[in-house]
Amino acid sequence: MKLSSCPFLMLLVAGPGRRGGAAAASVFSLDSDDAVKKSASVLAWDMLQYYHGNESGATPGILPGPPPGGDYYWWEAGAMWGTLIHYWALTGDETYNGEIMKAMQSQVGEGQDYMPRNVTVSLGNDDQAFWGMAAMLAAESKFPDPPADRPGWLGLAQAVFNTQASPQRHDGTCGGGLRWQIPFTNNGYGYKNSEFLPRCRAAELRRAPTPDHGAGISSGCFFNMAARLSRYTGDARYSDWAEKTWDWVEQVGFIDPGNYAVYDGANVAADCKDINEVQYSYNNAIFAEGAAFMYNVTKGEQRWRDRVDKLIDYGLKTFFPDDVAVEISCEPHDSCKTDMFAYKGFMHRWYASATQIAPFTAGRVLPVLRKSAQAAVAQCTGGADGRQCGLNWADGRYVGETGAGQEMSVLAAVQSLLVGSARPPVTHDSGGTSAGSPNGGKGDESPVPGQKAVTAGDRVGASLVTISLLAGACGMFGWMGYEASGP
Image 1 (cartoon, rainbow, N blue to C red):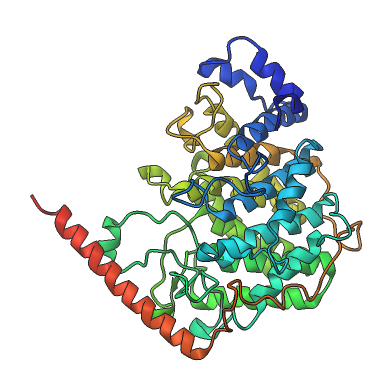
Image 2 (cartoon, rainbow, N blue to C red):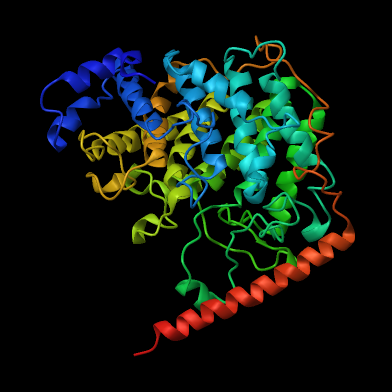
């Protein structure tokens, strides 16, 4: 992207006094809708400076990575394009629409269901779902449709959903639910909604490094897509899956029935009894937005209203202390990893969306989102240009490093302030034009060329590998703990 494509930003860069915290603070204003749009345009530009897929010889659609080739796994680019689709829908700025279209279509994969074979070695259900949810948002927002010879946004979301609803993904272990990884050969296939690092024993986990991803999002994303597809299409098949998924998550204990905390997951080898109680903001938010869509689908059923209420009440209390978003799992002790830098932005986006679909939430949600966004931009004073954003919004000052995830989170927080005057997500019956593909993805169960369907024997083997990995990891952490306790 050339600087000339963003005239407002050219004025900012050309102006005097562009270095230092005081000057940077003047760049961002949330005092009016126009000011919010201008601030969002700067943040969008700064976020895309981490994207190089539009450069000669680069791969369109992806951020630099995965490690060690760069900081970012494949899923985060899908999240970034979803954030930019939301940016376009809320601001009307078409500057990046061409890049969004190219990126989203470039990564659809051989089966047109967001399972490109070159990302198989780290492909989780949550990774695939972030691209599918971006496509779903494009359909709901009436983002420009792709050319007729390319898959439509609705069809892509349906293809992702179909692959995840298949018996190969929803097996009988733990009574149902999605595993983290898709290929059974991948490390992590033995976890359902769990972290890469198992809990082992509590004392050992306290010595272990915090995982750098939240695979517990898998069932939340699937539930969310089911609810949104149900509203968009009117097809009860999707709402049935949403109901079934919610019931399983509650039954297995990943949503605490007492306080509505959303826990990250558990290990298949332990029949999902060893629940990992780490909490991430976006796990709460993905279920809150999905429940809001189900409230809308069911025309205001009390049970879905109650679920929305309880999730949002818990989320505001837990993840917005003093009305400013905090990633409680890692931020207070400076242990956040690359993936986690984006989570608070998802929470802002999905809570804002919930207020459109379930308007009874707006009165308590929107004022908190505004105060949190104000704190977010106040600390964007880092970097050579004096306006780069960090993670620690509550500090009121720039702390630590910046990156695509930090910029994405602040952009999401800022642009979400426009949701009150924005058009709610459309449906097929209220203006939606996106081409569907109800049977999409059903012929692409395996993302690995030549990989056979997973059999019961394969799963037993995977479970044995998992048990071995659990034992090895626990032993490793025990050894680390022994070494740490030495003189």
